Image (cartoon, rainbow, N blue to C red):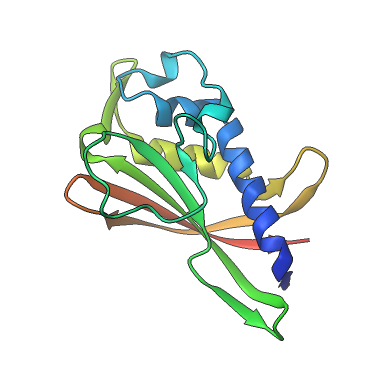
Length: 167
């Protein structure tokens, strides 16, 4: 099913809102320590785009960025195929989970875990196939692929790819 072009922006915003509302995602992104899930919940406005500790952004990661040890999710459309100038033939959404190399491994309750895979698991679970706002379901996310991306000398990423279908 084709998506009207003007729905791309609001649907991406709905995806971002779903990400920042997820308490465990917030903790995994915000706390650079062991046992991040044992830390207090993070106010979603802090990690949202333009928040004081932005962790979710609607654009690709700057590959020249270095220095600060952070974890972030960048969610965006890598490219869009249009049909008849107004309908999107296919919408692929990328979730780039960019994590400083020193933060990839962490301990939670005496178990070693890989932070980007734990974040990816929560992203897939968060949407459970659907994109919703507070009143209605607007579409589906069907996760198709996951791959490793070398970003620069300090950061690596895990990229989730999902096909978006709107109703």
